[in-house]
Amino acid sequence: MKARLPFVFIIITMMLNSIGIGLILPVMPDLITDLTGGSISSAALWGGILATTYAVMQFFTGPTLGNLSDRFGRRPILLISLIAMGLDYILLSLAGTIWWLFAGRVIAGVAGATFSTASAYIADISTPEKRAANFGLIGAAFGIGFIIGPAIGGFLGEIGPRVPFMTAAVVALANATLGYFILPETLVQSKRRAFDWTRANPLGALLSIRKIPHLASLVTVFLVFTISHQVYPSVWSYYTIERFDFSPKMIGASLGTFGFFIAVVQGGMIRVIIPKLGEMRTAMWGMGLNFFVFLLVAFLGEVWMLFALMPLMALGAVAGPALQGIMSKWVDDDAQGELQGIFASVTGIALILSPITMTSIFKYFTSSDAPYYLPGAPFVASSLLEISAMVMLFVIAKRIWGNAAVPAE
Figure 1 (tube, rainbow, N blue to C red):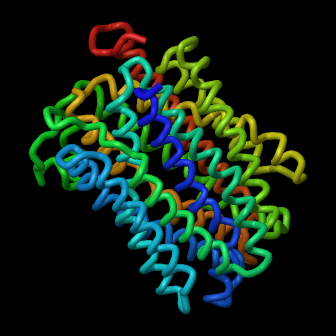
Figure 2 (cartoon, one colour; figure 1 turned 45 degrees about the horizontal axis):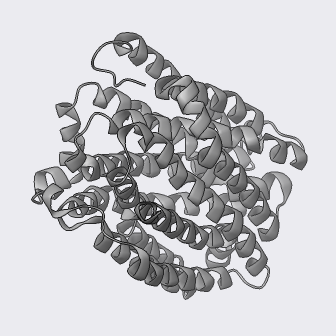
């Protein structure tokens, strides 16, 4: 039981962290419209720009912090990130202009190593064959936080758009305090390596992909998949307001329901799906499912249809942990933090491209001069990206599946 405590601690830490993030999502559109005085279409574009600001900072700092965790350990990097998030939420709660939000997104981007460091933490204490499933549990913890966080955020948002930010600050700082007392270090001194700026900067981290056979091709698939899947956080709040006239409470309820299914899939079903299908087939199957789901979401006519599709939305997310599991088998134990830094870089690129692209598409197709009014247009774009990623993965699998370069399932 004692050997399992670090694993339990990191999952709890990630759950509490996601609660803080989920608290603010239902009220971000209202806060932006309050600060800018614009329409929901304009607010969506501002939201995309803010998300891109966050992503740019994460892109430049994620690999550095991932490599710092390989040098100094996971625990201090994780705790510092959590404290920075708490300070970020305080700043957002006091925002007087849209530029305060930009400052807050810069801080949050620097603190974005929380997830990559947590993944490295999980890799430290997991056997190679269980890493993919355990990566899925990070998603499950995130999902549980999204059951609780958005629901509370939507409720508090009815009081005022700044109240959830204040609450999120308390949660984040409490999370850091909890981590200080219950989160042990997992990277032993013998497995730590010297810090190298060449490997720590974003381009250095991406260039290191070339050292590992087939990793670059799979990272490309992971990039396209992530750009596509980021349509949910990029436009969900704005899409549901425009299409279904959702209040903050309804946005919170819908995100909470989605989080519940994410938790079920990544916390339980993924442990059945991956052993049965294998990691490569799981990834292909998940992306194929996403293609059809995105198209359905784009043309929904009723609220009940949105909720009915949520189990399938969540099921498609299995592709991400499956891809991570494949790639984690191809690096040494002392470079798992570096690999998570690569994931952070790739995710950062996706987060730079996806929010601004998806919100721009949303703004264009909801504006008065649009050739065709379609709030779900970003989901059509995501479906095309998803099928492209699936085809790329099929080509890769056909080329390398079954030879010695592919890790055994």
